[in-house]
Image 1 (cartoon, rainbow, N blue to C red):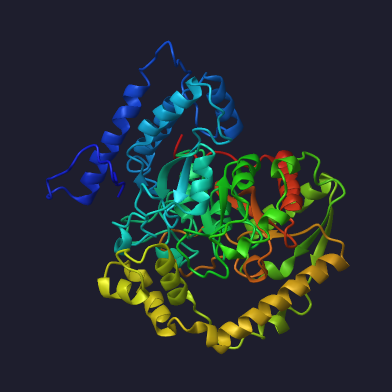
Image 2 (cartoon, rainbow, N blue to C red):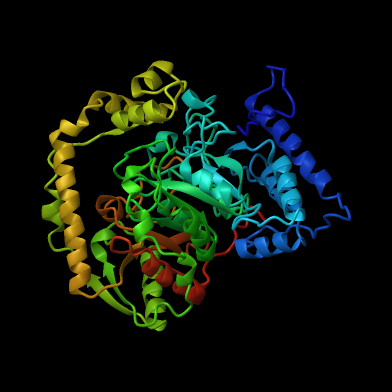
Length: 537
């Protein structure tokens, strides 16, 4: 449900109200200040009505900095859309918590602007944040009732950085519980599935599906998600968004509740490449709280926005990595859209090799002998470091609580059986050897063919119907980027069956974000596939 945390504007004492009735009442209450705010004008701060559907960050910032748009009016407009479309109407069901003091924060930011202070790069930009990012002023449930009341002591590093730049965490988004599945967005913290706004009977993918559905529906200006194997890129592809999974070590995961620490990465999800890069420019940096980022400051670009180049495909060499996606179950509609994407890349001046291969891939994958399930270990380490007083801090405690969705019970039991001493398991040791071999093989392939990037459909099949776990899923993101730690981003490449979005992945060498951004932005500018969903007009 949408919960008003911490500073509750009202208390609901009638326990007989159903969860749906409570949710509807809270939505109405949250929307009331927004409606009243639209009527306010003063000589100190007059503003135009906020236009937020598909509005880029640069447009919002220009209006805010000039004073033509007040922060209060902007936040009120997003709150009104959330009230209209998330809990009622199409009932997208994307948000777990809406910030109850969002308008108060907006007023404080308006005061900062009127005082003539220097404004941050994200001044008053309302963001949607996945509910596994720790937020000191909002609960962090990780999709589970077991943590529904947990209010962390500190913000995740990435959240702290966007807030320092002036952003407002407008809402926390629904997610697959404990980030366990890439296929759907459902957990115990919020009843029901999050719906794909492009087709309300379809999934959002997982686990960052709540962020994707909310950003696609213009419930916020942009969002933050996490990606262990798919969960920024898959939901972005399913909702016609741009999502960036960075090189391992370029962005901090401190304060993000882990799934698999050796593969977890957090990053931006947005409606344009420029918006995604605006966030990425702020979050890419070293962090003493996440030792894996020790090289980030030396490796990062001074300004990733410099790579938003319209003719960035001219002269590029790109290879189609068929091993990533070309399987018998791939949807013919996705094949057609991908073939058109290849033609578009060539039309913009890129050389595209029809098929390139990592010749040793099968041998590399056989190097891992046995399973490796570090979730129990990584979760216990996280809470021991961040908050030992959290309601649950181990997998065993989660199981004992009984406060979880039935679909995750088996995964929790498997993690408990694996235990916390997985470092000594043969499966985990040999997995690291396989990862190192794949990094070498991918780099060798790209060097030998002089490639700037590898491409493939982000998913080989259209979004499945909610509840369907039998038809082919088409997830192509689990192997190459997570296993190597190399960067990948997805951009919209069109629609299958008229309305269902499909995504194109650009995958590259370590630290090649500037190249991938340049290619992805040029493709976006040439094709302009992104369009708003009809269910949230």
